Length: 268
Image 1 (cartoon, helix red, strand yellow):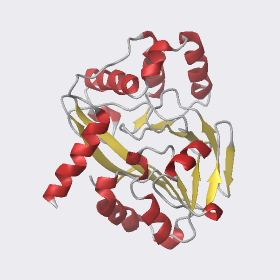
Image 2 (cartoon, rainbow, N blue to C red):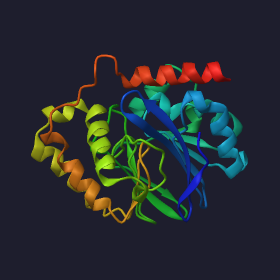
Image 3 (tube, helix red, strand yellow):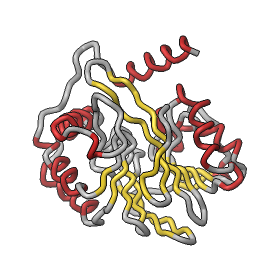
Image 4 (cartoon, helix red, strand yellow):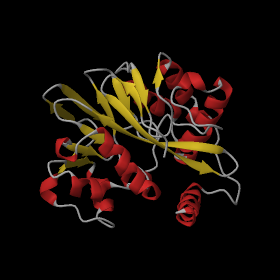
């Protein structure tokens, strides 16, 4: 885990990193959003459970957390979910029905504490309105992105992420070539289907999200982006015209997560 940092007036990033052998580091971010009803977007990796919860509860009293949004069911987004729901008795889970079904394979989540959402849905809070969208690239059919209409923040889940040499909080800290090279790799790696997608259809879907005119883009796997959001949309529009990215035979993203957990266990 890295130290938390601010991405906006009411947004705190709780960051970690997953080493990808032969490529670099993939950020693994969760986001705490303060307001009338504070909510958390994603819950970190299993390997970080203790450190993640320590970081989260240093930022907010468990009794004050009202919502936990899981953008999809992958383990790097759900690592502390049961513990957070147990510690925060007023918090309810928001996720897609497909993700909820898959989460049920590992966790017992009381039905009365769950709200399910689909792309196209809207979530109204006392001080903000959130809409849900299908991000342009994803590796789970249950994935949702969130757009906060109160401040123009797009929480894009895995989409728009990158792989870099060193941890970074903001896009401006990363050499441009490095960022966009890692961007091309990660967004094709998590969505190899883009090489088979109709380019115009893909771009029409992307245009719908771009039409929200996000002022800030927060990926689970990338730095905070402000001021250059349009550049990321332009880079994303080229993804389906590129060949599928295939790792070397000994490079597997899921295997990297398992290896990272094993290494951390040995250190503890």
